[in-house]
Length: 307
Image (cartoon, rainbow, N blue to C red):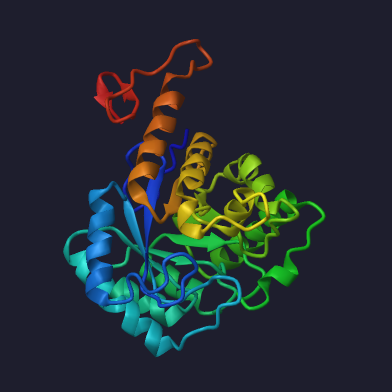
């Protein structure tokens, strides 16, 4: 099980759950549902009530084929939502590829920058993150949404994703980002082909990323590789919002494999899944043949104290 601790963020001794708030009209699974700021704020608070450890606020869709919005529009969408959630002491991450948006979000209370481009979309991003001294999710990325799937070509997807991520880590470290603040994300669905099985291979070999020593974020929720797995007999993909049970399965597997956090749309069942994974991991015999006592919430106990 994961023991990763990222400064400034919750550390409950199990895989974290990041709930998604898309303040967009066109996100792939819930576009428009939370576009109104008041609805987005209420949704964020509801996700926390359901067990989210972090709420990820984004104002620009990164679904395949999506076109970019202006910086001003992205700021207009996310800043009031982050400010309001921070006022309620909610740990908020900002999902953005723009340094200016990241900087503004941190200024109003965001505690983590979740950059799907890993710093490639905006050369100023790493500098801004370093100056803000907040955790930084570096995701594997090979281009913007309008053409990323044409770049889903790999000889060895696990090795190439790991190596390209570590290249990005080297680059952001050179810009002053603290290594203790870096989180890796394999970028499921981003320049990964469902037909070629890239996403499943990465999930099956998550150990290749956790072995780097960096915490790992997994975002499988409602992705197209799940819709295709669950397709009807005639090949019609399952609707995005009807893939939540499959998402819970990926959450349990990722948590058991040592993921630091999972990013999901429906929080409560995934929060249950990470606790189940934690309880099983804590009960598994260690090298000396003993196992840790398990608390009611799925966390291991050491010396009579929960960790």
